[in-house]
Image (tube, rainbow, N blue to C red; front, side):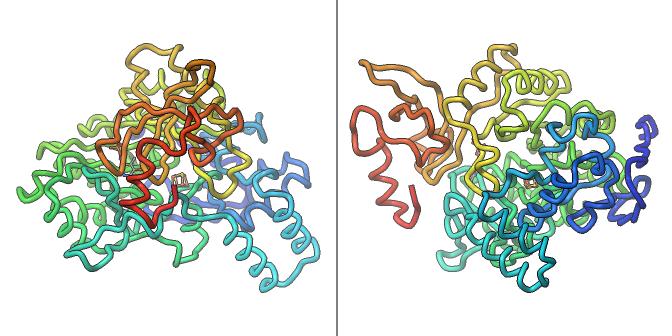
Length: 462
Ligand SMILES: *Cc1c(COP(=O)(O)O)cnc(C)c1O
Ligand code: SF4
């Protein structure tokens, strides 16, 4: 892809390349230890930089040269949305946690003491929301838990390959952060290629496989092949759709164009498409600015040429995209580039939740105002959607019935498929930020599904 202007790397101080996969463009990555080496950060005040050090002691931080050189607008830092998306910010830890770490850093406390404080704070930050860890674990033969898989909705199996449990850069709001800070007990991952295939073989009602992470696109193509190539066989004809959740399209577009195994990746995509699979890259997009980079545009075009679809999804976040015009422009750009807007999520409750959270009523207003600005082709994103214990719940709107203000809700996905698309109501609450905050409307004790949910999935929190 010689048409892509090479990234200059000029903004990087003392490059210490850590090449991972590439032939043409080295993948240079920076973590907390390297904060001082990212030259453009020097335009921030010393206090701001110190705060970044404090926050990144607790929450994972990882950025690469493409994000630094091509995506961040350094003239607008710290407000720049892409900067907010990857760099730790002062407000991301709550006061008590922040000052505890700040004091230790100022006192130059020894590693052990600091490490202990960091571990305690991380443990308080609720790493696996909606019981992701202990729930939804599929079993083979009714016995054995299958590591790194979730089967929550009838037609879709989620698979977390062990080689895909990191990302080309980390989002500062990521609910999967626990996996990135090295606590292995919090990891949900699998290298059980065989059990994945065995499970799919035994579940003919499963039509969709969703490979997720981390970011499965950090994997070498040859690893991806071990998972996907067998699905070309007739015994897997029921697997009609293969989705790959990824942020690489905008965080490391060279994965699809210039990396040493990019061509092999495209060939794999083409084989799956030729075999009649619907292959969809579920691209995580937070802001239209990510889609302006020529390298990203080249990657989108190349993926589309392979016959794979690109659908987009992303959470609504304060400081990054809590503005209808940002979503409208993002959806319009996506449609123009041949991508299909799919989900707008409500940010879930982990890590730096307070920093990013938005009241549900505001989330709905932003969604609605954004929808109004785009044509029908841009209105395919459903949301605002909350992935809660009972299912994916969409806020359809706020209305008034017989003098009571309420939220109208529906399931986009339900533990019981019969719940899907039935409207239900919750009492209006201007401060609610998550489904747990909502109470049934009309003074009722339960939602229509509550009793069944408690009975059939008793180990799950509502
Ligand atoms: C969203 C989701 C899916 C996929 O649901 P679709 O409605 O098909 O997009 C599958 N499993 C889990 C756990 C999910 O959260
Ligand atoms: S790309 Fe996805 S998994 Fe990776 S840090 Fe961002 S939100 Fe988390």
